Length: 217
Length: 269
Image 1 (cartoon, rainbow over the protein chains, first blue to last red):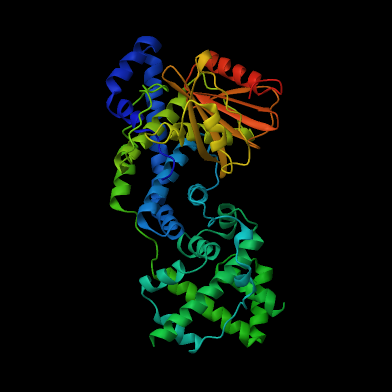
Image 2: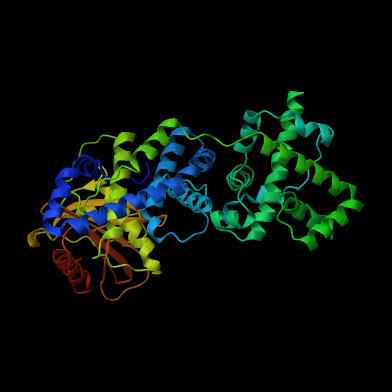
């Protein structure tokens, strides 16, 4: 689905070390080659140490945006590929929001490739949901109703059922645990929009949560 | 503070994002407004329930292993990989082969980082586009990805783009001059559909990307190298052109010269 490097590139790089190495040694000299090898190896290790700890975060957001496991895996993989490619010029922000920004771009590109528009900007927010009242009275009393659905699977389904922009912001805040500033950067919107959208998203989630519990009880 | 403001700011309070002054204001409002107090409690309870529920998905073991195993084992290789002629099997690559590509990408980037020959364009808005253009070029070399319409007939390629992109890309047959027209492809760069006209010089593929706006306008040809690929960018007749190939700089320059000459109003496109 996403950007793939040609399979023909893989064989020489993975198995042809000896040939490649000797060819370069002849032309470039031993010192340069050793320095280069250290450099590339060191860089790969730095990338690995910095980026791999966030794989669960990247995969989780991918899972909620792409809505199925195989696409999420491809998107996460492509995210790391792009991140590695740009690692030399990476000067911040923090690694986690940086990776999630890349992931979001990967998902956007995939959606536009498929001719769908899911992870785009503000204008995509359905006006009907924007006009909904922020607060909907729950059927049960608020103290008790919320706390019944402790089970993670129910919560996952409720989050997954939210419209894209709201689902995304809930995941970035509640699961990826980003700050408002970081969410603004990942979603490409001002912090004020993050705040109003999060309020809206939580109100929608809470309404769905109450409805689910009303149906269950 | 009124209730409408409070409805927004109480979330910032829950999330620990509120400064001391606003915190006091929200707390003062909540102390007097039972409706907002109820909301604050309900949303805080929801937030805490979600925090406690551990909703983060664990990445599949296979994905983690592939990433984990390949990264430290990067072999030192020069920037130009051996590249066979483009293959045309219509086989979906396996995840493993894709991942091999990942490793190769790492090697390429590493090589670029180490190369003294590399021209770096820091802070250049076009650099991102150049990266994407090169990625699209590399992707197109994937088996079955090079062409959507495969023909050496320029009069077949040009109409094929109708309705697919918002430009009519010039399709010029340069076969007689050693650049074989292979066909055309619809690609996506920067999230936008872009026409690519594909040429071949000996065993080297050239992707010529054409769009109405793709990077900044360059009246003269702007050269650069990305990941060992030669890239030429220029603007002509209200269109942006990006030529990418592993062809050497001189021959790619020759190709660009022939295209620009042909695209001129009195040319032959």
